[in-house]
Length: 536
Image (cartoon, rainbow, N blue to C red):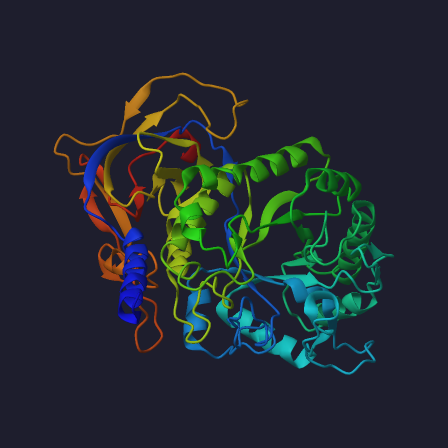
């Protein structure tokens, strides 16, 4: 076979793969959204949306790609106007500082005699890097930035300090809190506001790189609580104590929560349910409703563990990037990822998750912002629209029709009405649907829940049909799921030359008209006039 024939075949295969993830010619199908409005099934924090800042240096590479550039806590350009505006828009955005290298960080406080040096790559030691240091001058700069942007800060502390690591990854000994306490005192004395102190990163259960037994972790968490109580005894509000910041394993979490007593305010777990970023089937997973449903098992299990324990801690997703090892370019930073991300926000809310931290705000291939020019990726706008429209109370929602529709409803943030989120994972079918308030309760993910049978109500409209709803239709530019440009009601969302974010404006639709969800699209529907008991 000649070179020309081979190149033609390669080109054909590439084009075929590209077309596979674009909108094709469409057919129309009817469906119906049922919203149970008698009571909320879950409640989220007012500042539910959270994003992470990590420690990775520019040398961090995955599968031959180095995607972190200057996105680290230590080298991020805090003067960038787009970055500042992106955070300010959430008013407030919760920011969790942490990641793999946090358990190698020392803090340049007065007690610390070691020189304050940056991380250095060394593949022969744990996590592949030497110990790194946070200079207090940089910490001051970061806090000035957080005050300016209105961010709420969760700081992840080094939980491996003082421990020895066996060859099998088992961490032995108690946490040496000396440097951490000195750092917390410096923070408080300089009037830097930290809303929560989190202990460790991915050291629970089987651990990633190292692991700490649940009993010891509970002892260390109580130690952290005592430190916070001492340092902030004459200050208000008292920062939260958070942990363990790792992957959920029921037995480990059960023991940990039972032994932390009332020392813990929030229990954090991490989600990378899509597998490694190098996986060529990421998009297939994202577009598969059955695959997306699987993460409900974790949410439900953790909710049950919390319910059965005596803890007062609530559930947070402390870090979630979907695809681990920095994600995948043109997937985790493209339009298609909003299907996964918004589905995660909706699903976690149903299971009473209070905060959801996306890995990352910037850095890797899964940042909400582009790592090099700071412009928002599609998921940034998805998060921002969620923040503007979805209130604290999640309502049980079901869809009658194709399984390719994902549906979630919250009490509206901007009114006493409701906001419905609809995600169409089908590339050929346009869904035409109406919303009904239904008191028949049947939760897809939890078979054991109680059933309520009442009448079904049509949504209200006046005799002239003049009541309008607000719709926000999100699509990929040119219908290409790999696109890094998101369109709102057909218009590209882009920052201007001054670094200002585009306005988020709906279209107004007569309430008597059905909702139309185009193939491969996302729709937020804000119904101001629909008042249900849960939202009253």
